[in-house]
Amino acid sequence: MKLIQQICTGVLILSAACSWAQQPDTTPAPPVPAVVGRENNGDQMLTPPPVSGQSYPTSFSSGERSNYLRGGLAFTAAYTDNARPSETGQPISDVSYSVAPFLALDETTPRLHWVLTYAPGFTFYRRLSALNETDQNAAIDVQYRLSPHVTFSARDGFQKSSNVFNQPDLGSSQIVSGGTQQPNFSVIAPIADRLSNSGNVGITYQFAANGMVGASGTFSNLHYPNPTEVPGLFDSSSQAGSAFYSYRASKMHYIGATYEYQRLVTYPTIGQSETQTHAFLFFYTLYATPKFSISFFGGPQHSDTLLPPQPPLLLPLPQVRSWNPAAGGSLSWQGPRTNVAASYSHIVSGGGGLISAVRMDSASASIRQQLARRLSGAVEGSYVQNDILGGALIGASNGHTVGGTGSLEQQFGQHIYVRAGYTRLHQDYSSVAVLAATPNTNREFISISYQFSRPLGR
Image (tube, rainbow, N blue to C red):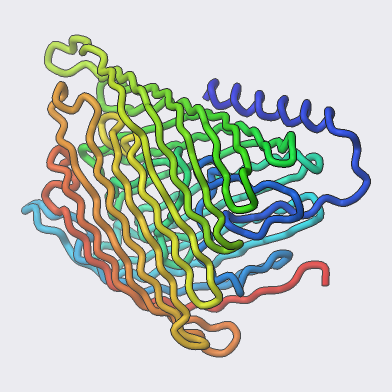
């Protein structure tokens, strides 16, 4: 945590220095764009997706609003065929019932935009009552204009749950991002106690009409309170820092470069595994329209991995060093009736519970379509290949995760929504005991929710 404290302190000092260097401006600055791809304001540059640290929006553009208080209550019934492995190695199926209140505050002022979300939950199982749980989901996202050309941003998300499918957005777990430093949560124990937290703090300074620099620090933590529920998976943490330069070649074209550092730590039963990476990446973003953008990034990445000692002799293992290409791309399109987001990346990332950091190939996509005035559909999917760094030295096998969800949502009146869908999850990790015997999970669900939205200050 010392590294993150140093990064955050440096970012705050840089923000204060940049703000002091600017002449005071008595005219209100326009609000900061809250999401990737939103319209530009005057001469203000956008922060391209490869360095913004933001996820792509998933709502239809016509429904985006700010200065609102939103809330409601959702009731979900679900059937899963993999609630818990049995002693014979066959999974036990069960039906669960969840009650999830939620509250979100979204406010925009001339200099500040912030969103606060809180969504607790309560889940009950019909057969396996020992799995009954209480969930906690909280997130905050803040963007503050320190001066007309300096913007500070911070975001943090926390989740406590024993069911990875219980998400604060009423069941949709797919997140698509164009960033290069996203935490790896792709290895999933479907029903096991888990605490996860990830955050980002950053600053951007537009020092010229078409020039911008920025810096950011990120962190993530993954903790399993009961290790006996997840044999083969381990706690992990990551800290990272980056700095970038972006040049606006025209209204539509952005190019730039970024340096990134990562420290990725896993805590197995004996010792710990630690990987440090350095990457120098170039990026390009095309803003074809205010609602459609395409991004690419690529460059060299060096990793240095120290593996934990292995029984029975517990002798230290040689360090694993390598140079690898890092690359990726993403796109986002928001229309009045259609929303599409997709991304791919090939990078060194945290293991997400595996015994060491991984060389990860990750692809994800989300498509939402307004089928009728009150009926919408969504298809979301992802594929992640995790190749363990130094896996041959410690006898750990590589693996992959494939998941997808299809759903339909019908609105009744102004406040009632009914959503039904199906989720398929397949994980192939032969060296992870909790997943090796039962790699597949199928889940059918139906959710009924009451939602309200109230304007603030009107």
